[in-house]
Length: 159
Image 1 (cartoon, rainbow, N blue to C red):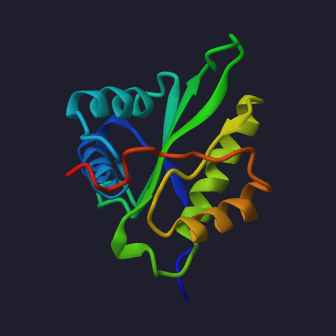
Image 2: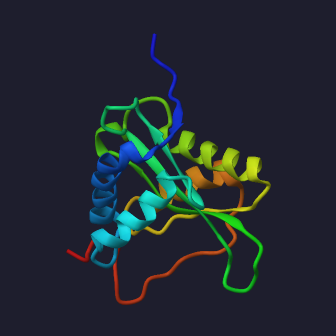
């Protein structure tokens, strides 16, 4: 019998593991070089529940299997708040494992947005396995509300 996946709320004790996961995500999906200080500020704030939250798949004290970084922000044209997904990443060792880790993290984001009574802004910005990612997001969230385009860059090519 397999253990059901759960997403736990990350805490500041998860900072080292989350930074490691973030650099892996930047290596794969970033299109500009990551700045450790900026990553640390964003991740630490959300781990501290300071206008954000991190959902982590994996037991406390063990390497995370995947995570989602959420921030509470206002769009440039309004003072109303929303939940913005900054990043969702499944460690490559767990992508083919059963359980639907990405789906669980998307469900976590929806629960956070619902509990805060805020809209959720979430999307796919990737040049790798993009069609499959979009199909999974469509199953979770419905039809897309637009698209991203990169001119003069490809995700993962900043290195």
